[in-house]
Length: 264
Image (cartoon, rainbow, N blue to C red; front, side, top):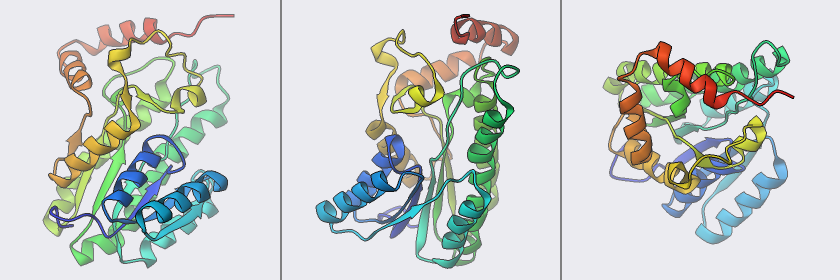
């Protein structure tokens, strides 16, 4: 994908709210046509209508639950069939807070299905056309949680660690074929993520937070510059650098105390 021009057609998963919605809004404003993917049809249709009217872009809606194999397959097929897609943003994902042993296993496996399996399958489908045409890019959304073992958020952190390592390796494989893969590790971002994860973040100070628009803008700038890893926000980059200097055994103990949920 040419780094000097906006993508022609981008697919954004998890586009109905939060960071995904911000990606869609920013890309449409820059002249990119869109395919929006999420489970909530009403939200997707509202966003698509707004973007068409405001920016005059072509916006398609693809309603799919990426944990469901048949629905995921439909999204994969769209990627394989539409050679115009030159940017895939794998933003869909979620976390669940709690002790792994006490959570229903289905909730943990659901995170693996959405955060890992769906992302991997969609990336493979996108590369089926991007690599032969020697153009395109993929932005995979991970998390700063990927950089640390995180008790009471263990499956989510582990899935995002997969996203980081998968993306870094994949970029090395594809960079000689005109395709750039960028992985993004946002920190605390004001979205619906915390409420869905049942995570109480009210004690976090204001300076640690970013907006979804901030994350999306930094991510797109990093991708356009050909950067493989993006940690949006100076505070998150400093934290990542400092924690990399500490032994993981100490970090996991400290994080466990911070993330442990109150006992009833």
